[in-house]
Amino acid sequence: MVKVKADFHNHLRTGSKLRDDDFNKAVDIASKRLGAGGVFGMVNFDDDRYEKFISLKGYERTYIGEKRNAIYVPERQIMVVRGQEVPTKQGHLLVLVSDCSEHLKGERSLEDTIKEAKDVNGVIIADHPFYIERIGDYLRKNLDLLRKIDALEVYNGEAAFSLPFGPLNSGANKKAFEFYSEVKEDFPCLGALCSSDGHSFYELGRHWTEIEALDGEGLNSSLRKAIRDTSLDSITCQNRFFSKVG
Image 1 (spheres, rainbow, N blue to C red):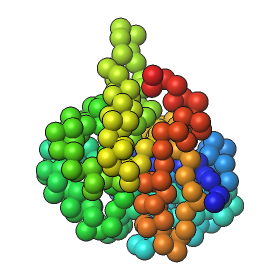
Image 2: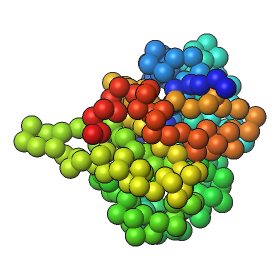
Image 3: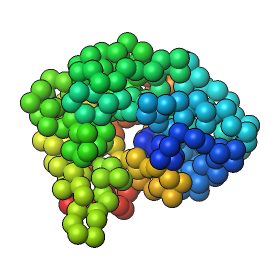
């Protein structure tokens, strides 16, 4: 199977206001860092930045997915998938390739949010589970929820940042890595992801996971399988930044 690099968690800017040249700029950076076939997620957060991004002028693109929830840029061989980071009562949850007409409701229980995400055929990821707005502690007490989640984000670029007077993350990535290692045997369909969680062009594509190339004809099922098939071993081998976890 063909392998490609994917950075599924990006917001591109701190705010949702995008500039006219952002499309080509982001795609060019992704092409350089992720290579041919690379994939990056453009993630909404109480906004519609994915929808704004794919409507910007720039390279020719092909709309793919069941509900235009991804695009492919042939000239740069890059795919962009839609994501939404949803604030729940227990912390944040990342949902990929849900229907563009669907914006999942925030500030509900994690269980209700997971159910809604499944109803719209989304791929569900526990992002930065032990960082700010984390759900990791809740998952520890409710392990059966892991059967409904497709992957844990075991390395988050934002969670790796530190301040001059001490670490901001308090070992968030290390905790995520260790938690995944503890539960993987009991939840073999749970994948492991390394993502940038970028809020700037500088961060886009700097942290990534190697996955099987996606099938645009059955995007949701293809993406779910590719994410579930990821492992700590593949991330360790493919991402030099991952050494910071230990």
